[in-house]
Length: 77
Image 1 (tube, one colour):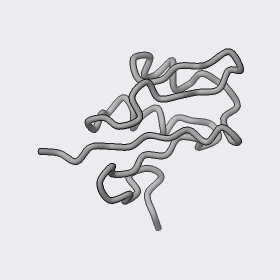
Image 2 (cartoon, helix red, strand yellow):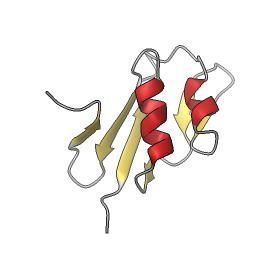
Image 3 (cartoon, helix red, strand yellow):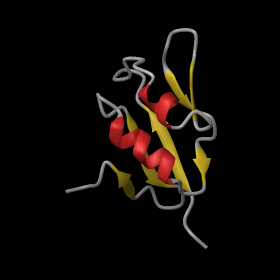
Image 4 (cartoon, helix red, strand yellow):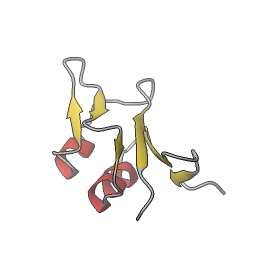
């Protein structure tokens, strides 16, 4: 069984571009302040979520392994 992911959006970095919602509309929502939020912060791995994180223009989305906190995106150097 694959590890679960924990998704976070840094509200200080998020500019509300909506790229995440456009790429993964079932996974992200914008609130009234145009801040992104994951629909389910802890979830199974998903190519859509990873693509949304990679496509964020300000890299506000982070993905870690839920059990260990190990970075999935952005990868640690």
